[in-house]
Amino acid sequence: IREITDGEIAQFDNIYNGVDWGWYPDLYAFVRVHYAPAQHTLFIWQEYTCNKTKNIDTAKHLLELGITANDLITCDSAENKSVEDYRAYGLLARGAEKGPNSREYSYKWLQSLRSIVIDNKRCPVACEEFINCEYDRDKEGNVISGYPDGNDHVIDAVRYAMERVWKRRGQ
Image 1 (tube, rainbow, N blue to C red):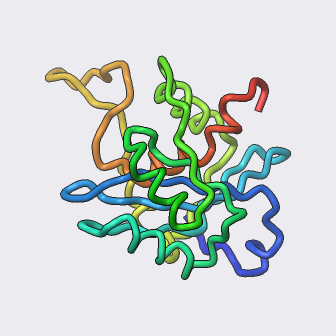
Image 2: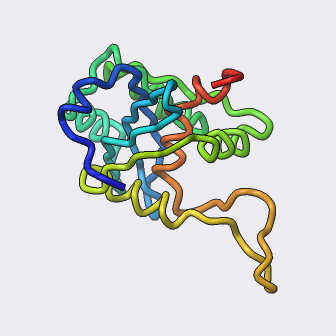
């Protein structure tokens, strides 16, 4: 958890974008990340979250953040209509290719990274979610296998953003 400087961001060349759709009480979450494969490090440096906001309004906000028609956004594929809305609004959106065990594989990939750097001023929700993410436990305090679900909207957006990387073997 640390500041990611504007100078660092200017050098980022492997930028990925992800969206987890939400309305209420679930958050809509957009995230921009940079992956440094040589360092096996992920930098989370931009987020936008909200509740009860229409697709057209979140799309406008992404454009205000500097997202262009050339910036691929990998979105939760559970809402194909929302992905199509983003395309209609001029954004390069595609649905994530969910499949058997994709959630588990993406979490394992995140756990395999040497480090995940999160700018807590620019990305306070990501910071909170990653810090508080832990395995569920049974009544005796033993860790339950599987990955917890809930309070993970930015984490899901990161997983979608990085799908093209974690699906490649050896990355």
